[in-house]
Length: 534
Ligand code: 1PR
Image (tube, rainbow, N blue to C red; front, side, top):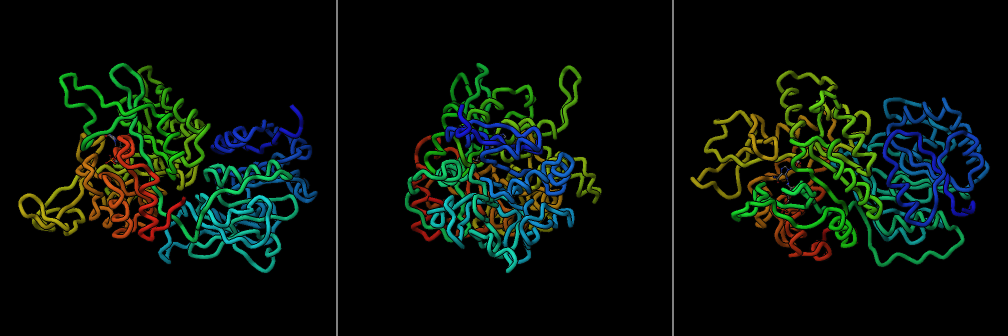
Protein backbone atom coordinates (compact mmCIF):
# COMPACT_ATOMS: atom_id res chain seq x y z
CA UNK A 1 0.00 0.00 0.00
CA UNK A 2 1.38 3.41 -0.89
CA UNK A 3 1.51 6.20 1.68
CA UNK A 4 -1.09 7.91 -0.46
CA UNK A 5 -3.79 5.48 0.49
CA UNK A 6 -3.13 5.55 4.23
CA UNK A 7 -4.90 7.67 6.80
CA UNK A 8 -3.42 7.99 10.26
CA UNK A 9 -6.08 7.86 12.93
CA UNK A 10 -5.71 9.15 16.45
CA UNK A 11 -7.98 6.97 18.58
CA UNK A 12 -7.24 7.25 22.29
CA UNK A 13 -9.76 4.54 23.09
CA UNK A 14 -12.49 6.57 24.78
CA UNK A 15 -15.42 5.47 22.71
CA UNK A 16 -16.75 4.44 19.38
CA UNK A 17 -14.74 5.59 16.41
CA UNK A 18 -15.89 2.62 14.41
CA UNK A 19 -18.02 4.74 12.13
CA UNK A 20 -15.12 7.04 11.28
CA UNK A 21 -13.04 3.96 10.48
CA UNK A 22 -15.84 2.53 8.38
CA UNK A 23 -16.28 5.74 6.43
CA UNK A 24 -12.54 6.01 5.70
CA UNK A 25 -12.46 2.39 4.53
CA UNK A 26 -15.60 2.91 2.48
CA UNK A 27 -13.74 5.71 0.66
CA UNK A 28 -10.89 3.37 -0.23
CA UNK A 29 -8.27 4.20 2.39
CA UNK A 30 -6.34 2.11 4.84
CA UNK A 31 -6.02 3.13 8.46
CA UNK A 32 -2.85 3.35 10.48
CA UNK A 33 -3.47 3.76 14.18
CA UNK A 34 -1.35 6.17 16.17
CA UNK A 35 0.68 4.24 18.75
CA UNK A 36 3.32 6.82 19.62
CA UNK A 37 3.70 10.58 19.25
CA UNK A 38 6.12 9.92 16.36
CA UNK A 39 3.27 8.33 14.40
CA UNK A 40 1.54 11.69 14.52
CA UNK A 41 4.62 13.58 13.35
CA UNK A 42 5.12 11.10 10.49
CA UNK A 43 1.52 11.08 9.28
CA UNK A 44 0.76 12.21 5.74
CA UNK A 45 -2.83 12.92 6.79
CA UNK A 46 -4.25 12.72 10.26
CA UNK A 47 -7.86 12.28 11.36
CA UNK A 48 -8.72 12.96 14.99
CA UNK A 49 -12.27 11.95 15.92
CA UNK A 50 -12.59 13.16 19.48
CA UNK A 51 -14.96 11.12 21.60
CA UNK A 52 -15.95 11.15 25.24
CA UNK A 53 -15.54 14.11 27.54
CA UNK A 54 -13.04 16.96 27.31
CA UNK A 55 -11.12 16.37 30.56
CA UNK A 56 -10.23 12.68 30.14
CA UNK A 57 -9.28 13.34 26.50
CA UNK A 58 -6.87 16.12 27.52
CA UNK A 59 -5.46 13.92 30.23
CA UNK A 60 -4.58 11.15 27.78
CA UNK A 61 -3.13 13.62 25.27
CA UNK A 62 -0.89 15.22 27.88
CA UNK A 63 0.21 11.98 29.55
CA UNK A 64 1.19 10.27 26.31
CA UNK A 65 2.93 13.22 24.71
CA UNK A 66 0.43 13.06 21.88
CA UNK A 67 -0.90 16.52 22.65
CA UNK A 68 2.50 18.04 22.07
CA UNK A 69 2.95 16.07 18.85
CA UNK A 70 -0.50 17.20 17.70
CA UNK A 71 0.36 20.85 18.29
CA UNK A 72 3.59 20.59 16.38
CA UNK A 73 1.88 18.69 13.51
CA UNK A 74 -0.78 21.35 13.23
CA UNK A 75 1.67 24.24 13.55
CA UNK A 76 3.54 22.75 10.58
CA UNK A 77 0.31 23.00 8.60
CA UNK A 78 0.13 19.26 7.91
CA UNK A 79 -3.20 17.80 6.64
CA UNK A 80 -5.46 17.44 9.68
CA UNK A 81 -9.13 16.77 10.23
CA UNK A 82 -10.56 16.99 13.75
CA UNK A 83 -14.11 15.84 14.39
CA UNK A 84 -16.44 16.96 17.22
CA UNK A 85 -14.31 16.89 20.39
CA UNK A 86 -11.40 16.83 17.94
CA UNK A 87 -12.36 20.43 17.14
CA UNK A 88 -13.09 21.50 20.71
CA UNK A 89 -9.72 20.29 22.03
CA UNK A 90 -7.93 22.76 19.75
CA UNK A 91 -9.31 25.69 21.76
CA UNK A 92 -7.88 27.22 24.92
CA UNK A 93 -10.28 25.70 27.41
CA UNK A 94 -13.64 24.05 27.99
CA UNK A 95 -16.31 24.50 30.63
CA UNK A 96 -17.16 20.78 30.45
CA UNK A 97 -16.62 19.68 34.08
CA UNK A 98 -14.11 22.48 34.18
CA UNK A 99 -12.67 24.91 33.21
CA UNK A 100 -10.16 22.49 31.70
CA UNK A 101 -7.23 23.64 29.60
CA UNK A 102 -7.21 22.59 25.95
CA UNK A 103 -4.43 22.45 23.36
CA UNK A 104 -4.62 26.21 22.97
CA UNK A 105 -4.05 26.38 19.23
CA UNK A 106 -7.18 28.46 18.60
CA UNK A 107 -8.20 31.42 20.80
CA UNK A 108 -11.50 30.93 22.61
CA UNK A 109 -13.35 28.70 25.03
CA UNK A 110 -15.88 25.90 24.69
CA UNK A 111 -19.12 26.30 26.67
CA UNK A 112 -22.45 24.56 27.14
CA UNK A 113 -25.54 25.38 25.10
CA UNK A 114 -28.12 27.33 27.02
CA UNK A 115 -31.42 25.42 27.05
CA UNK A 116 -33.29 28.23 28.79
CA UNK A 117 -34.16 29.90 25.49
CA UNK A 118 -36.22 26.94 24.31
CA UNK A 119 -33.50 25.12 22.41
CA UNK A 120 -33.22 21.51 23.47
CA UNK A 121 -29.85 20.31 24.73
CA UNK A 122 -28.07 18.17 23.54
CA UNK A 123 -28.16 19.67 20.08
CA UNK A 124 -28.99 16.47 18.19
CA UNK A 125 -29.81 16.28 14.54
CA UNK A 126 -29.37 17.63 11.04
CA UNK A 127 -28.65 21.32 10.90
CA UNK A 128 -27.60 23.89 8.31
CA UNK A 129 -24.21 25.59 8.06
CA UNK A 130 -23.53 29.23 7.30
CA UNK A 131 -20.33 29.30 5.31
CA UNK A 132 -17.95 31.97 6.59
CA UNK A 133 -15.06 31.49 4.23
CA UNK A 134 -13.99 29.21 1.48
CA UNK A 135 -12.94 25.74 2.56
CA UNK A 136 -12.25 23.09 -0.05
CA UNK A 137 -13.73 20.35 2.14
CA UNK A 138 -17.06 22.14 2.52
CA UNK A 139 -17.56 23.30 -1.04
CA UNK A 140 -21.33 22.97 -1.68
CA UNK A 141 -22.21 21.83 1.82
CA UNK A 142 -23.84 25.13 2.72
CA UNK A 143 -27.04 24.03 1.00
CA UNK A 144 -27.27 20.78 2.92
CA UNK A 145 -27.86 19.51 6.42
CA UNK A 146 -25.10 17.84 8.39
CA UNK A 147 -25.43 15.78 11.57
CA UNK A 148 -24.58 17.27 14.96
CA UNK A 149 -24.68 15.69 18.39
CA UNK A 150 -23.19 17.69 21.27
CA UNK A 151 -23.97 19.78 24.33
CA UNK A 152 -20.85 21.99 24.22
CA UNK A 153 -19.71 24.33 21.49
CA UNK A 154 -16.96 26.86 20.68
CA UNK A 155 -18.03 30.44 20.20
CA UNK A 156 -16.85 32.82 17.49
CA UNK A 157 -14.92 35.91 18.57
CA UNK A 158 -12.70 38.55 17.01
CA UNK A 159 -9.69 36.56 18.15
CA UNK A 160 -10.60 33.36 16.32
CA UNK A 161 -12.33 34.92 13.31
CA UNK A 162 -9.52 33.99 10.93
CA UNK A 163 -10.03 30.27 11.72
CA UNK A 164 -13.78 30.03 11.19
CA UNK A 165 -14.96 28.42 7.96
CA UNK A 166 -18.61 27.96 8.99
CA UNK A 167 -21.02 28.61 11.81
CA UNK A 168 -24.35 27.12 12.79
CA UNK A 169 -27.33 28.72 14.51
CA UNK A 170 -28.81 26.89 17.44
CA UNK A 171 -29.94 29.36 20.04
CA UNK A 172 -26.60 31.03 19.58
CA UNK A 173 -24.30 31.14 16.64
CA UNK A 174 -21.47 28.69 17.29
CA UNK A 175 -18.42 27.47 15.37
CA UNK A 176 -19.34 24.57 13.08
CA UNK A 177 -15.96 24.25 11.38
CA UNK A 178 -12.51 25.80 11.21
CA UNK A 179 -9.89 25.86 8.50
CA UNK A 180 -6.42 27.28 8.19
CA UNK A 181 -4.21 26.02 5.40
CA UNK A 182 -4.37 22.24 5.54
CA UNK A 183 -5.83 22.16 9.02
CA UNK A 184 -9.55 21.42 9.27
CA UNK A 185 -11.89 20.59 12.10
CA UNK A 186 -15.65 20.17 12.20
CA UNK A 187 -18.10 20.14 15.10
CA UNK A 188 -20.56 17.96 13.17
CA UNK A 189 -20.06 14.32 12.19
CA UNK A 190 -19.24 13.86 8.50
CA UNK A 191 -19.11 10.09 9.08
CA UNK A 192 -22.77 10.26 10.14
CA UNK A 193 -23.97 12.83 7.61
CA UNK A 194 -24.92 10.50 4.77
CA UNK A 195 -23.71 11.31 1.24
CA UNK A 196 -22.97 14.92 2.10
CA UNK A 197 -20.70 13.82 4.95
CA UNK A 198 -18.93 11.24 2.81
CA UNK A 199 -18.22 13.92 0.24
CA UNK A 200 -16.64 16.14 2.94
CA UNK A 201 -14.35 13.28 3.94
CA UNK A 202 -13.60 12.55 0.30
CA UNK A 203 -12.58 16.17 -0.29
CA UNK A 204 -10.21 15.98 2.68
CA UNK A 205 -8.73 12.64 1.64
CA UNK A 206 -8.35 13.47 -2.06
CA UNK A 207 -7.49 17.17 -1.83
CA UNK A 208 -6.70 17.76 -5.48
CA UNK A 209 -9.39 15.70 -7.08
CA UNK A 210 -12.67 17.01 -8.33
CA UNK A 211 -15.35 15.60 -6.11
CA UNK A 212 -18.76 15.75 -7.71
CA UNK A 213 -21.22 18.22 -6.21
CA UNK A 214 -23.82 16.71 -3.96
CA UNK A 215 -27.33 17.14 -5.40
CA UNK A 216 -29.93 19.77 -4.60
CA UNK A 217 -30.43 20.86 -1.02
CA UNK A 218 -31.87 23.78 0.89
CA UNK A 219 -30.91 23.80 4.54
CA UNK A 220 -31.71 26.66 6.88
CA UNK A 221 -32.13 25.27 10.38
CA UNK A 222 -32.42 22.13 12.52
CA UNK A 223 -34.42 19.61 10.49
CA UNK A 224 -37.11 17.33 11.87
CA UNK A 225 -35.82 13.77 11.74
CA UNK A 226 -37.55 10.74 10.27
CA UNK A 227 -36.36 7.54 11.92
CA UNK A 228 -36.83 3.97 10.76
CA UNK A 229 -37.16 1.46 13.57
CA UNK A 230 -36.40 -2.23 13.37
CA UNK A 231 -37.76 -4.38 16.16
CA UNK A 232 -35.49 -7.40 16.09
CA UNK A 233 -35.83 -10.76 17.76
CA UNK A 234 -34.95 -14.39 17.19
CA UNK A 235 -37.72 -16.33 15.52
CA UNK A 236 -38.59 -19.84 16.63
CA UNK A 237 -35.65 -21.20 14.54
CA UNK A 238 -33.22 -18.90 16.32
CA UNK A 239 -32.62 -16.51 13.36
CA UNK A 240 -32.72 -12.78 13.97
CA UNK A 241 -35.60 -11.25 12.04
CA UNK A 242 -37.20 -7.86 11.86
CA UNK A 243 -40.62 -8.22 13.34
CA UNK A 244 -43.44 -5.82 14.09
CA UNK A 245 -46.08 -5.96 16.71
CA UNK A 246 -49.68 -5.03 16.90
CA UNK A 247 -49.88 -3.24 20.24
CA UNK A 248 -46.63 -5.09 21.02
CA UNK A 249 -47.93 -8.52 20.06
CA UNK A 250 -45.51 -9.80 17.41
CA UNK A 251 -47.02 -13.23 16.81
CA UNK A 252 -49.10 -14.00 13.73
CA UNK A 253 -52.75 -14.76 14.19
CA UNK A 254 -52.36 -18.28 12.82
CA UNK A 255 -52.47 -21.78 14.23
CA UNK A 256 -48.65 -21.83 14.48
CA UNK A 257 -48.62 -18.42 16.13
CA UNK A 258 -45.19 -17.76 14.65
CA UNK A 259 -43.19 -14.56 15.12
CA UNK A 260 -44.07 -12.12 12.33
CA UNK A 261 -41.09 -11.94 9.94
CA UNK A 262 -40.68 -8.77 7.90
CA UNK A 263 -37.12 -9.19 6.69
CA UNK A 264 -33.44 -9.21 7.53
CA UNK A 265 -32.13 -6.46 9.81
CA UNK A 266 -28.94 -5.52 7.90
CA UNK A 267 -30.65 -5.45 4.50
CA UNK A 268 -33.56 -3.40 5.73
CA UNK A 269 -31.30 -0.91 7.51
CA UNK A 270 -29.29 -0.38 4.31
CA UNK A 271 -32.47 0.05 2.33
CA UNK A 272 -33.80 2.69 4.74
CA UNK A 273 -30.47 4.53 4.67
CA UNK A 274 -30.66 4.71 0.87
CA UNK A 275 -34.28 5.82 1.11
CA UNK A 276 -33.27 8.81 3.23
CA UNK A 277 -33.82 7.70 6.85
CA UNK A 278 -32.13 10.21 9.14
CA UNK A 279 -31.41 7.53 11.70
CA UNK A 280 -31.92 3.82 12.15
CA UNK A 281 -32.94 2.22 15.45
CA UNK A 282 -32.64 -1.43 16.33
CA UNK A 283 -34.63 -2.67 19.29
CA UNK A 284 -33.72 -6.09 20.55
CA UNK A 285 -37.22 -6.64 21.82
CA UNK A 286 -36.51 -9.75 23.83
CA UNK A 287 -33.40 -8.24 25.37
CA UNK A 288 -35.01 -8.46 28.76
CA UNK A 289 -34.82 -12.23 28.39
CA UNK A 290 -31.67 -13.07 26.47
CA UNK A 291 -28.39 -11.67 27.51
CA UNK A 292 -27.09 -9.34 24.81
CA UNK A 293 -23.39 -10.12 25.25
CA UNK A 294 -24.30 -13.69 24.44
CA UNK A 295 -26.53 -12.31 21.73
CA UNK A 296 -23.79 -12.16 19.16
CA UNK A 297 -26.17 -11.89 16.20
CA UNK A 298 -27.23 -8.41 17.30
CA UNK A 299 -23.62 -7.28 17.59
CA UNK A 300 -22.99 -8.70 14.12
CA UNK A 301 -26.01 -6.84 12.81
CA UNK A 302 -24.50 -3.60 14.09
CA UNK A 303 -21.05 -4.37 12.72
CA UNK A 304 -22.34 -5.13 9.24
CA UNK A 305 -24.82 -2.26 9.18
CA UNK A 306 -22.26 0.32 10.24
CA UNK A 307 -20.03 -0.61 7.30
CA UNK A 308 -22.47 0.83 4.79
CA UNK A 309 -24.90 3.01 6.71
CA UNK A 310 -23.59 6.52 7.43
CA UNK A 311 -26.32 7.94 9.63
CA UNK A 312 -26.68 7.46 13.40
CA UNK A 313 -27.51 3.98 14.68
CA UNK A 314 -29.28 3.35 17.97
CA UNK A 315 -29.61 0.01 19.66
CA UNK A 316 -31.82 -0.93 22.59
CA UNK A 317 -32.93 -3.96 24.52
CA UNK A 318 -31.33 -5.64 27.49
CA UNK A 319 -29.11 -2.80 28.64
CA UNK A 320 -28.77 -3.41 32.38
CA UNK A 321 -26.57 -5.20 34.92
CA UNK A 322 -26.74 -8.92 34.44
CA UNK A 323 -25.46 -12.15 35.93
CA UNK A 324 -25.35 -15.02 33.46
CA UNK A 325 -26.13 -18.67 34.15
CA UNK A 326 -22.46 -19.33 34.95
CA UNK A 327 -22.61 -16.67 37.61
CA UNK A 328 -20.50 -14.15 35.71
CA UNK A 329 -21.56 -10.58 36.33
CA UNK A 330 -21.66 -8.00 33.56
CA UNK A 331 -22.28 -4.36 34.30
CA UNK A 332 -24.62 -2.40 32.09
CA UNK A 333 -21.59 -0.32 31.19
CA UNK A 334 -19.88 -3.39 29.73
CA UNK A 335 -23.02 -4.26 27.81
CA UNK A 336 -23.26 -0.74 26.42
CA UNK A 337 -19.53 -0.67 25.62
CA UNK A 338 -19.95 -3.81 23.53
CA UNK A 339 -22.79 -2.19 21.58
CA UNK A 340 -20.80 1.02 21.03
CA UNK A 341 -17.74 -0.91 19.89
CA UNK A 342 -19.88 -2.76 17.39
CA UNK A 343 -21.09 0.45 15.74
CA UNK A 344 -23.92 1.90 17.81
CA UNK A 345 -23.93 5.67 18.26
CA UNK A 346 -26.58 5.63 20.95
CA UNK A 347 -27.99 3.00 23.23
CA UNK A 348 -31.56 3.00 24.37
CA UNK A 349 -32.68 1.85 27.81
CA UNK A 350 -36.24 0.69 28.50
CA UNK A 351 -37.09 -1.36 31.57
CA UNK A 352 -34.00 -0.52 33.57
CA UNK A 353 -34.69 3.21 33.23
CA UNK A 354 -38.15 2.67 34.72
CA UNK A 355 -36.67 1.03 37.83
CA UNK A 356 -34.03 3.76 38.07
CA UNK A 357 -36.65 6.51 37.87
CA UNK A 358 -38.90 4.79 40.43
CA UNK A 359 -36.05 4.57 42.90
CA UNK A 360 -34.96 8.14 42.27
CA UNK A 361 -38.50 9.43 42.85
CA UNK A 362 -38.83 7.33 46.00
CA UNK A 363 -35.52 8.35 47.59
CA UNK A 364 -34.77 11.69 45.95
CA UNK A 365 -31.15 10.53 45.73
CA UNK A 366 -29.06 10.13 42.62
CA UNK A 367 -26.86 7.16 43.45
CA UNK A 368 -24.79 7.45 40.28
CA UNK A 369 -24.98 3.67 40.08
CA UNK A 370 -27.90 3.13 37.72
CA UNK A 371 -27.08 2.06 34.16
CA UNK A 372 -28.57 5.31 32.91
CA UNK A 373 -26.29 7.44 35.07
CA UNK A 374 -23.17 5.37 34.48
CA UNK A 375 -23.46 5.14 30.71
CA UNK A 376 -24.31 8.79 30.40
CA UNK A 377 -21.36 9.77 32.58
CA UNK A 378 -18.88 7.74 30.54
CA UNK A 379 -20.25 8.24 27.01
CA UNK A 380 -22.09 11.52 27.43
CA UNK A 381 -25.85 12.02 27.69
CA UNK A 382 -26.16 12.42 23.92
CA UNK A 383 -25.41 8.68 23.68
CA UNK A 384 -28.23 7.62 26.01
CA UNK A 385 -31.85 7.37 24.89
CA UNK A 386 -34.61 6.29 27.24
CA UNK A 387 -37.36 4.32 25.54
CA UNK A 388 -40.75 4.68 27.21
CA UNK A 389 -43.51 2.13 26.61
CA UNK A 390 -46.61 3.71 28.12
CA UNK A 391 -50.22 2.58 28.01
CA UNK A 392 -53.11 5.06 28.19
CA UNK A 393 -55.29 4.81 31.30
CA UNK A 394 -58.53 6.80 31.08
CA UNK A 395 -59.93 8.36 34.24
CA UNK A 396 -62.86 10.56 35.12
CA UNK A 397 -61.15 12.80 37.59
CA UNK A 398 -57.47 13.81 37.76
CA UNK A 399 -57.73 13.61 41.56
CA UNK A 400 -58.27 9.84 41.30
CA UNK A 401 -54.57 9.20 40.62
CA UNK A 402 -51.28 10.43 42.00
CA UNK A 403 -49.83 10.88 38.52
CA UNK A 404 -49.80 13.86 36.20
CA UNK A 405 -52.82 13.63 33.89
CA UNK A 406 -54.02 15.35 30.74
CA UNK A 407 -57.38 16.23 29.33
CA UNK A 408 -57.65 13.97 26.29
CA UNK A 409 -58.71 15.30 22.91
CA UNK A 410 -61.19 12.47 22.43
CA UNK A 411 -62.92 10.92 25.42
CA UNK A 412 -62.40 7.32 26.55
CA UNK A 413 -64.84 4.41 26.01
CA UNK A 414 -66.96 5.45 29.00
CA UNK A 415 -66.78 9.13 28.27
CA UNK A 416 -63.69 9.69 30.45
CA UNK A 417 -62.15 13.08 29.77
CA UNK A 418 -58.77 12.51 31.37
CA UNK A 419 -55.92 10.05 31.12
CA UNK A 420 -52.54 9.24 32.54
CA UNK A 421 -49.96 7.16 30.78
CA UNK A 422 -48.73 4.17 32.71
CA UNK A 423 -45.13 3.07 32.11
CA UNK A 424 -44.48 -0.60 31.49
CA UNK A 425 -41.44 -2.89 31.54
CA UNK A 426 -40.50 -6.10 29.73
CA UNK A 427 -41.99 -5.12 26.40
CA UNK A 428 -45.31 -3.92 27.80
CA UNK A 429 -45.88 -7.07 29.83
CA UNK A 430 -45.90 -5.41 33.23
CA UNK A 431 -47.42 -2.07 34.24
CA UNK A 432 -45.52 -0.04 36.84
CA UNK A 433 -46.65 2.57 39.36
CA UNK A 434 -45.15 5.51 37.46
CA UNK A 435 -46.48 7.75 34.72
CA UNK A 436 -44.76 8.71 31.47
CA UNK A 437 -44.59 12.34 32.66
CA UNK A 438 -42.90 11.43 35.95
CA UNK A 439 -40.55 9.04 34.17
CA UNK A 440 -39.54 11.57 31.51
CA UNK A 441 -38.73 14.26 34.09
CA UNK A 442 -36.77 11.82 36.25
CA UNK A 443 -34.68 10.31 33.45
CA UNK A 444 -33.83 13.76 32.14
CA UNK A 445 -32.36 14.53 35.56
CA UNK A 446 -30.56 11.19 35.67
CA UNK A 447 -28.75 11.92 32.42
CA UNK A 448 -30.88 10.78 29.48
CA UNK A 449 -30.07 12.77 26.34
CA UNK A 450 -33.20 11.91 24.40
CA UNK A 451 -36.56 10.22 24.85
CA UNK A 452 -38.05 7.65 22.51
CA UNK A 453 -41.75 7.94 23.25
CA UNK A 454 -43.76 4.91 22.19
CA UNK A 455 -47.42 4.28 22.91
CA UNK A 456 -48.68 0.72 23.27
CA UNK A 457 -52.27 1.69 22.36
CA UNK A 458 -51.16 3.17 19.03
CA UNK A 459 -48.37 0.73 18.11
CA UNK A 460 -49.00 -0.90 14.74
CA UNK A 461 -52.46 0.62 14.38
CA UNK A 462 -51.59 3.05 11.58
CA UNK A 463 -54.08 5.59 12.93
CA UNK A 464 -51.57 8.28 13.80
CA UNK A 465 -49.32 9.19 16.69
CA UNK A 466 -50.79 9.87 20.13
CA UNK A 467 -50.53 13.63 19.77
CA UNK A 468 -51.89 14.23 23.29
CA UNK A 469 -49.14 12.10 24.81
CA UNK A 470 -46.37 13.51 22.65
CA UNK A 471 -47.33 17.11 23.37
CA UNK A 472 -47.60 16.29 27.08
CA UNK A 473 -44.09 14.84 27.28
CA UNK A 474 -42.27 17.06 24.78
CA UNK A 475 -43.48 20.11 26.71
CA UNK A 476 -42.33 18.60 30.01
CA UNK A 477 -38.63 18.09 29.20
CA UNK A 478 -35.87 20.06 27.49
CA UNK A 479 -34.14 17.09 25.84
CA UNK A 480 -35.28 15.99 22.36
CA UNK A 481 -38.32 13.72 22.14
CA UNK A 482 -38.83 11.16 19.37
CA UNK A 483 -42.50 10.53 18.63
CA UNK A 484 -43.24 6.86 18.00
CA UNK A 485 -46.09 4.41 17.38
CA UNK A 486 -49.01 4.63 15.04
CA UNK A 487 -47.79 6.26 11.81
CA UNK A 488 -49.91 5.14 8.88
CA UNK A 489 -49.78 7.94 6.29
CA UNK A 490 -47.45 10.92 5.61
CA UNK A 491 -50.04 13.31 7.15
CA UNK A 492 -49.45 11.69 10.53
CA UNK A 493 -45.89 12.98 10.47
CA UNK A 494 -46.85 16.57 9.63
CA UNK A 495 -49.55 16.33 12.26
CA UNK A 496 -47.16 15.38 15.04
CA UNK A 497 -44.62 18.01 14.00
CA UNK A 498 -47.13 20.85 13.81
CA UNK A 499 -49.04 19.98 16.98
CA UNK A 500 -46.19 18.99 19.31
CA UNK A 501 -42.59 19.84 20.06
CA UNK A 502 -41.28 16.45 18.94
CA UNK A 503 -37.82 16.64 17.37
CA UNK A 504 -38.16 13.43 15.40
CA UNK A 505 -40.77 10.90 14.39
CA UNK A 506 -40.18 7.18 14.22
CA UNK A 507 -42.09 4.53 12.33
CA UNK A 508 -41.76 0.86 11.65
CA UNK A 509 -44.74 -0.91 10.10
CA UNK A 510 -45.45 1.45 7.22
CA UNK A 511 -41.84 1.24 6.07
CA UNK A 512 -41.52 -2.53 6.50
CA UNK A 513 -44.76 -3.20 4.65
CA UNK A 514 -43.63 -0.74 1.94
CA UNK A 515 -46.86 1.17 2.26
CA UNK A 516 -45.16 4.57 2.30
CA UNK A 517 -41.52 5.11 1.31
CA UNK A 518 -39.41 7.40 3.51
CA UNK A 519 -38.92 9.86 0.61
CA UNK A 520 -42.67 10.29 0.31
CA UNK A 521 -42.89 11.19 3.98
CA UNK A 522 -40.13 13.75 3.57
CA UNK A 523 -41.58 15.26 0.41
CA UNK A 524 -44.87 15.65 2.20
CA UNK A 525 -43.21 17.37 5.18
CA UNK A 526 -41.35 19.71 2.86
CA UNK A 527 -44.58 20.60 1.10
CA UNK A 528 -46.11 21.40 4.48
CA UNK A 529 -43.26 23.80 5.21
CA UNK A 530 -41.53 21.52 7.72
CA UNK A 531 -37.77 21.45 7.31
CA UNK A 532 -36.28 18.02 6.65
CA UNK A 533 -33.01 16.72 5.29
CA UNK A 534 -33.26 15.85 1.61
O1 1PR B 1 -36.63 -3.02 28.35
O2 1PR B 1 -34.37 -2.08 28.01
O3 1PR B 1 -34.85 -4.44 27.39
O4 1PR B 1 -35.76 -2.55 26.08
C1 1PR B 1 -36.68 -3.23 25.29
C2 1PR B 1 -36.98 -2.39 24.10
O5 1PR B 1 -37.74 -3.15 23.19
C3 1PR B 1 -37.79 -1.15 24.44
O6 1PR B 1 -37.29 -0.06 23.69
C4 1PR B 1 -39.21 -1.51 23.99
O7 1PR B 1 -39.86 -0.37 23.46
C5 1PR B 1 -38.94 -2.51 22.89
N1 1PR B 1 -39.98 -3.54 22.82
C6 1PR B 1 -40.18 -4.53 23.72
N2 1PR B 1 -41.19 -5.32 23.29
C7 1PR B 1 -41.63 -4.84 22.14
C8 1PR B 1 -42.72 -5.39 21.33
O8 1PR B 1 -43.12 -4.82 20.33
N3 1PR B 1 -43.25 -6.52 21.74
N4 1PR B 1 -41.01 -2.96 20.75
C9 1PR B 1 -40.88 -3.72 21.84
C10 1PR B 1 -41.33 -1.72 20.84
C11 1PR B 1 -42.18 -0.09 19.64
C12 1PR B 1 -41.69 0.86 18.68
C13 1PR B 1 -42.29 0.56 17.33
C14 1PR B 1 -43.19 1.75 17.17
C15 1PR B 1 -43.54 2.08 15.79
N5 1PR B 1 -41.46 -1.28 19.57
O9 1PR B 1 -40.38 1.14 18.70
O10 1PR B 1 -41.27 0.41 16.45
O11 1PR B 1 -44.33 1.55 17.98
O12 1PR B 1 -44.35 1.09 15.25
P1 1PR B 1 -45.41 1.45 14.12
O13 1PR B 1 -44.83 2.54 13.30
O14 1PR B 1 -45.54 0.19 13.31
O15 1PR B 1 -46.65 1.82 14.84
P2 1PR B 1 -35.41 -3.06 27.55
